[in-house]
Image 1: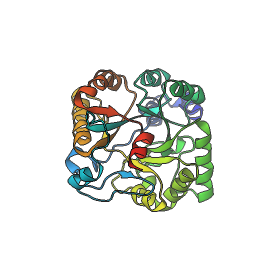
Image 2: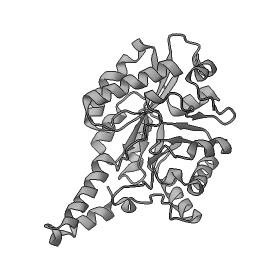
Image 3: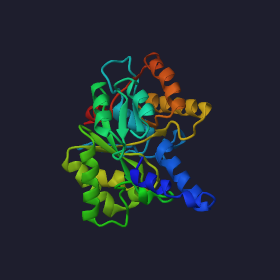
Image 4: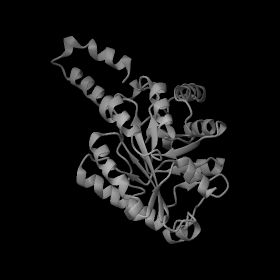
Amino acid sequence: MTIKLMNRVGGLGKYKNSHSFFKIILMCFCFTFVGCSEKPTNLLSLENYELPSGLVMIDKPVMDSSLEAFARLHIPLSSDNKIQGFIVLIIDDMGLNHGFASRAVKLPPKVTLSYLPYALHLKKQVTNALQAGHEIMLHLPMEAHQMMGQDTVPNILMVSMTPSELEEKINWAFSQIPQFTGVNNHMGSRFTEWPEGMEVLLRSIKKRGLFFLDSRTTAQSVAFTMAKNMGLPFVQRDVFIDHFQNEQAIYQQLASLENIALKRGYVVAIAHPHPQTMDILEKWLPTLPEKKLHLISVKDLLKKFH
């Protein structure tokens, strides 16, 4: 949670009966509990298999839009025929709530954890996650089309910024987290549609030998095409597990990602460290071996397709 924002709230006593006071309180709730999550696009839902693959390797981007053709290209993924599909699971919005984040760290080591760069005591949190064996990502804040108070998010990437301003924000974010392997967007429906800004970001990522994972908060994201043209290791989200905090909805999304993994060979899913999500994941993850599904990190998935 940002100190700047909390200080603003603390100085609003004289507005306690005003509309402005309640708007600020709502902003604090957003940053603290939901990490300013944006509504995801349905571009890569289970019903839309005909869309292009979301995996781009340095030398061999897959552009075939047919699921069957994709399967012919990439299955089997393992010499062990007991494994029929791989699951990449990323937990986003890590770091703001230390209790929630600590619980996520106790998930199996192949679960990838993506930390917001403005979380408090971040290096200590990330060090603990690394010691537990997790792959670490940077969850980089980017401008959304509609999000109240997003200009108060520390060092968020905005479409109004110059290339030098963007580089300054990117360098700051990269300096906050030790030993991360890739970057994905926090919010970003507006920024990921902006070629000029994405050019600056993706080149910074490539220069450091990292990968980019597009959370796909907009169907108009330019990340896929630009990463392909740059030769940048890239992957994009297939399923948001817990956009709706409802047990039935979460289990439906888990069933969807299982089907995608078994039919296509892999799936990329994003969840968040909400208590209900953790309750369900702790029960669901041990069932994967009997379904011939296997957890894998983003970096290891990219290696398998290189």
